[in-house]
Image (cartoon, rainbow, N blue to C red):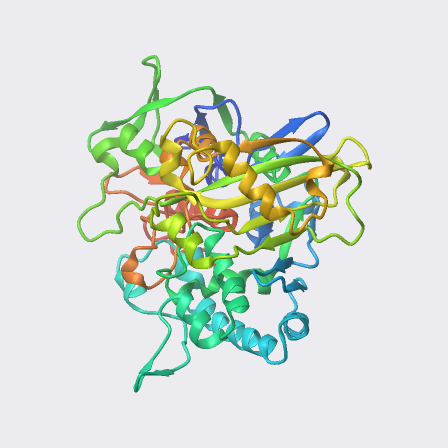
Length: 507
């Protein structure tokens, strides 16, 4: 039985801890804050409950696998996961609206044809067929296997089968999401639909490789899910699974250093000077925190994927509304920015001056557990903002003012919720600084999923490090950010520790 120290109680770290405990190891999780879940947090006030992190669950099979492998119980024995239908309602810049069915290609094609005109749905459907090919080519190396030693194969090959496009007497193929939108989808509304999937992960569609087509494909193929009571309930279930398998948690305990002995990780040092010996150390922390606690022990050798730091974060506004949620309301509405170019310049280019109107995701769950009674509604608004703002004095919007940022989101949301301001009881704002406080990520940066192509700049470092016994887990290491990826990260680290370097992933 090995002694394993886990730094951080995020979702990936807990997933790994549960699997390692089932394998017979003694696992202790050290978390500097007073709770578990990492970015999967919640807020409660006056009988209202809100998710302040992810609000929906893609690819729930990852978490179903965790519960089966750590106790032969279905996930549904611990939480109620339900499909969201429609998957999303989109309100485009020109006022056009489209409600897209959940996990139904034929339904989505029909809905887009009706909303955007004949042929629009077919173009989107054809794109999904090509996106599936990209998914099939990258699923195992980017989700289910440890990062390949010859990772440059993933970096140099574009798996998306782009359609040849003739332009200025030249034949070209789309290499970015923006080019897919312009050359293959050929409708600014379809392009906005596509790009919103990248923007939600803090990715710039102008530079994000075409391989990111897997993001809308995952939603289409596996559906969009919600956990009753909020996504915080999933974090609770994973935490309780860890406890049931004997994992020990020490909250309010900060790790200040990874201890090295005879050339390998041998434990951790805690604030106050206490040392805890371990045979393996698993770090589920952001790159800057890892640099601080592990120093050179976590450095990547020449030729390995370096640590990646995201440029984007998230601004979230929690709304307590008087009046019942209208029947037939979509769970998720995406209100697209009126000026796409201005938004991208504001988020990714550091454009000076007032911030552009953002693309806003509006979540309106039909869940009695979130409100004090049937005469109220709990709504969550979110938008992508630059991560660097989190480093300043609690900035919350692209103009550096949390109140102004909240106003931007509320104004945009009125396109989806008529009479919003008249129903508003109060609101709370969660800024990049709040994310930084919860996760330790500099500037409140939010990690994106690993993606192929683009020279490897959207890959994440391997879970193993150059120091024997030291591993990394969670959104800042392979396979990157997002709830499914966090769960797979935990599975990969557990496999590498239990089976050793010969581990090749789930079968």
